[in-house]
Length: 148
Image (cartoon, rainbow, N blue to C red):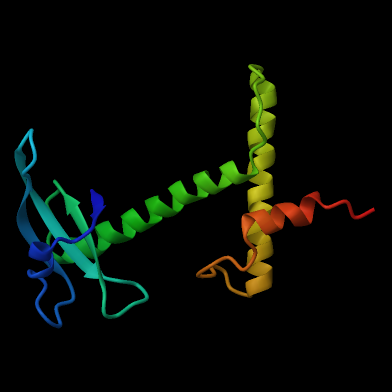
């Protein structure tokens, strides 16, 4: 399952006021090499914007009752992938082939990432702020500044 940018043909399938749409769809590639594949597309309401829908393409069997569950699972997976990408912001560069050094650096980066998350929760007063009030570059400057 992947998130999709809806084509005009996909958008036309969403009738006014529809909450969720599930439909069979044929994806086509017109440039050479040409190809087509039958898939299922579905759209669920956007979490924060009532006028928008989030679209997905999948080879799974989806109906209106399972579409929201699949979208929620995708959202959790996306959050996990984003977390790993952000941990990389705290990971020091090394060329050491020693496993223990590389493991220490990774665990230290995870600790800094968790500290950044905690700082954002405390500053925003929310468990999951929409946008972190403290960006990773600002947080890095705060913790790397000599306070002595």
